[in-house]
Image 1: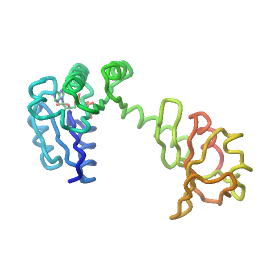
Image 2: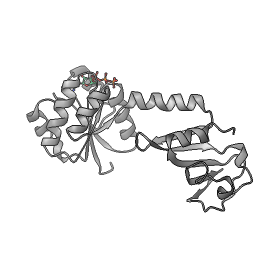
Image 3: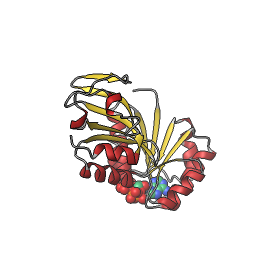
Image 4: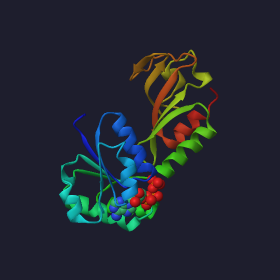
Length: 218
Ligand code: ATP
């Protein structure tokens, strides 16, 4: 097992998917839920699965939760339980707490009490909407509400031109972090880098600039 220790509280669809992936990657995960049957179902997937109420400080303490590198609170619908658990984890001195928010207000509260907040449903929907609108988007990472990194097939108009001739930075306002060409990857390409047909670009920029880029014909 790798040495980073993770705990996931709340074994709904999101919590279980996270545990499954971390376990597949060779990490040791402690799975916690207050429902007996749910915990039972997690036994085959997680290294350890225990039944505990995450709003019970003593219960979390006795699990040695403060020794985990990251604790993810994947309780969505039970907003009160999610907030209480996050407060307790912070008070117990857990280094990094990441909590799943059900909506914007829930997220605001979680942020205020010191959690890293994720919105899986919203983020997945945004991702899907963007890829439905533009078929050349291969992947995307949201860095902040305004900035993202996009992996996309280079627009046809770029072929045979260098980055400076295309004016990616000056005209389009985006920075090309890498160019993927078949099995090869050109990291931090220079301004004179020529784009070939079929190249894949990894671009960083403001969402509206990236959207414009992704809407160009590939
Ligand atoms: P998903 O969308 O991921 O399926 P969800 O956002 O609907 O889940 P919930 O159903 O609210 O989330 O909770 C997920 C899990 O968290 C459930 O299995 C539930 O038993 C568990 N849970 C709820 N409250 C607590 C608590 N106080 N302590 C531990 N686990 C809890």
